[in-house]
Structure formats: structure tokens, C-alpha cells
Length: 595
Image 1 (cartoon, rainbow, N blue to C red):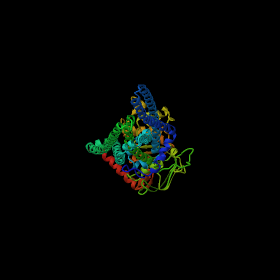
Image 2 (image 1 turned 120 degrees about the horizontal axis):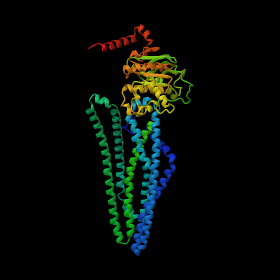
Image 3 (image 1 turned 90 degrees about the horizontal axis):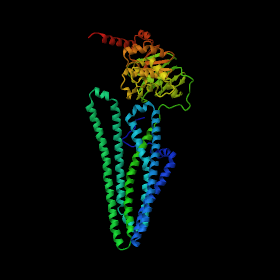
Image 4 (image 1 turned 135 degrees about the vertical axis):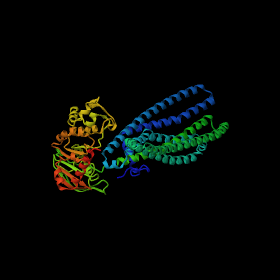
């Protein structure tokens, strides 16, 4: 799997794009059909109005009847009123239908993104994914809300005007079409240039969204290292590239529109020049010349619009290809078609000769085997990159292994329901993610089965209530994005309360107390001891003092378990663990010495 490339249009699913789009339009075919009928009616009105006025002019010229002019004016007013009613109905229904389709598409896309494996997010920038859900879906909105129906409308209008003009006066019609080949050449050239401009704009827009997503999230690091000026220069470069892309797109339109307008005026001048001589020679009537003058104006307008709509349609289709490329992305961690649902997950975990690599090549775990009994407390220690966190990720089945097997309560986790498995595991991590909302929402995470009383009890159990109840809003205190108004320790306590409230069978702690001060850590030690009772607990920690009470400590080194045993047993082995312990003790003692 690799991240999506914006420098080229994804053609993997191009043949299926229209089929997939039709699947979204299918429930709304009645509304779409109504809009097409309104389009035909509006086109008929457009064709009829010049003929109505032209006939009135001829009758007035021949008979001088004012009554006929009044009658024509009334009919014309009725036609205009009907046209307005049809146009309003079509626009309202089309916009409503388009918004419903976009709503469904955005829901499906986000739901699918949530189902993807973590490996997808490892490789795909957040800004690019956001662009798919926002900008690319919005490009589809333009197609559903106008382009398809108006494309049909303009094609019908062009054909209708051409047929009527040929019927009225074949020679004048041919004179009107004399510059049409030039318009066709300009249109083809415009489509090519516009397609390139649209594609470049989308690429630059994705780049700047990716940059903003990453750097706004990392603004603290930028300010700590004083890199504001350099990062602004990088942003300015991307911003200018986006500006140039938009400018190029604007210039394409700025040249095409006036060029076709000039050709339209030249065609009108030719018809008026030839037509006026024929009127003077009594070959055609003034009404016929008026009809042709009106038709030429109306004939070239949909041609100009059609070229732009084709380009917009191509842009929308390119966005659709990118959207469906994401939606066709298969999760690497697949749910079993008939998953095993255990009555209860007790928490017996077994790794049997497990080999694992994130990229299927460079193994981070090599032939790892161990058994954790229900209720047992096990800790993993080792240098950075030894494979400790990878073991935790595999237990929750966020990745799948290449060799060996992992079982929980004797069942291979690939057979278990992912939902049941992950609900049974309570994860407490060093990097706590707090969502915008309030404190109770962050503890409950929209689980309506968890009552307010249970939320309070969980917070009190881990001593999070000490700071929560001091806040003006208490458990309904607003939480900003990423919990920016809370300290790292407070966010960590919230994660403890969140885990306890969901009552898991297995506890997973990845440096869970790293951001908690010594005083707070002492406060939660007793709560953790009670929390661990009857639950399988797996801990990863660099501070060896926090895991000395574990039933078993496993020492990882370069993807393998090198040592295992209790704290005292490992010290007696005089191996890797003892060296780590002595280095840490020496370091802590050294820090306490007076300067």
C-alpha cells in the first residue's frame, strides 16, 4: 500500500467511475428525470420566444395591427412566467438532490476511512485525506447540482437552435455556422488547457492542505525551535504555487470567453449584413432576420458554456476517481466473514512464534513466543525500537502478523470480532488524544450505556476528580482541541478515567505514567492496583521502578525476548535487565547530587 499520488489522475478505477456514480444517483432518478423534463420545457420556451416576437413583427409590418402586438405581449409574458416557474422548480429540486447525494457520499467516504487499517494512516498524510473528504467531495457537488443536467440542456439547445435555423432559412443558417469550425478548435484547445489547469490546482491545493495540517498541529515545536521564519518561507512557496495555478486557470477562462464572444459577434455581423440586403430585396422578412439575430446570440452561448462544463465535468470525474480510489482501498486487517463471538473475554494471551514487519520486509518482531494468563501482570522493557509497542498493537489487532499466531482465550485473534476484541482492551498511552467537547464526553466517548454516575466514579477512582471538580463547569467543562487547556498530567488522568469507565478485561499501558508527576503518580498507584485486580495487564515502561511489581518482566532486544522473570530473578541473572536497572539507578542518583 502507498499513499495516493496527486501529481497524476488515478486511473485504477476509471472504468468503474460512472457505474459508481450511477449507484449514488439511482435512488434519485425520479428527481433527475423531472429536472430533465424541465430542461426540455425550458429549451422549448427559449426556441419559441424569438419565433413569437418575429411573427408579431411581420404581422405588424404587414397589417399594422396593434391588437396582435398586445396579444403577443400577453402570450410572451405567460411564456416567461412558465419559464421562470420551470427554472425555479428545476433549480430547487436539482440542488436538493445534489446535496443529498453529496451527503451520502461524504458519509460513505468517512465511514470507509474509519474502517481502514492503521497502516493506511501511517503512509497517507492527514491533509491529503482531509482534501478527499472536503475539496474532492465538494467538486462532486458541482457536478450533481448542475453540470450533468446543464450539460444535457446545452446539448439540446445547440441541436434545437441548429435545426430551427436550418428550417427557417437554410442559407442564412449556413452563414451563421461559417465560424463554427473555429469555435470547435478553440473549444478543444480550451478543454485541454483547462484540464491541465484544474489538475495542477487540485495538486497544489492538496499540498497546502497537507502542509497546514502537519504544521499547525506541530506549531509548538516550530515555536520552540524558532523556525517560524523558515516555515513561513515554505508556506509562502506553496501558497505562491497555488496562486500561480489559480492564475493559470483564470487566464485560460479569460482568453477563451472573449475569443468565443468575438466569434459570436462576427457571426452576427455576417448574418445582419447579408440578411439586411435580403430584407431590402424582399427575400426574407424583418421578423425572420430578428429571429436569426436572436438565435445566433443564443446558439453560441451554450457552446461557450458547454466547453467550460466539459472541463468542470473532467475535474469532477478526476475528483471522483480519487474518492473511489480511497473507497476501494481494502483494510489490511480484514474482519472474519463469520467471526467468533466469545461469551466473555477472560484475557489469556499467547504469542506463538510470531514474526512481524510493518512493511512485510524489515521484521521488528522475530520469533516471539510467550503466554500471559488471565489476571497476570506482565511488563515489557527494552531499548527504543526493541518491539515493545508493536506487541501492544498486535494484541489489539491493529496490524496482522506475517508468521506465527496470536490467540486470546485460545482463539486466534484473526477469528475474533474486531469490535469485541477492542472493546475488551483498555489502552492507556503516553500520547493522550483528547477530543473537542466536554470532560464527560471525553470519558464516555459517546457510549450512552455509561451513565454520568459511572463517569464520576471512574474519575474519582483514578483521582481525576481532584482537578475536574475544581473547574467552573465540572464534568461539563468545555475541552478545546487536543485538550490544549489541560496539562499533560491532567490529560493522562482523563485517559485513565476513560479506560476504567469502559471496564475492559485487558489493560494495556504504554508509558502510561510518563507524563504524571511523582505526587500524582503516588495518588493513582493504589487505584491502579485495584484496577488491575482480575484483569490481564500489559505494561511498557522505561522507568523500571514503575513495573517492579509485575508478575513477569520480559526484556526485549532487537525484536526478540532475551530475558524473562520477576524483578528479583532478572537482577540475579546479571544480564540486560540488570544493566538497564543499574544505569537508571545511577542516573537518578546522579540527578539528586548537589551541584
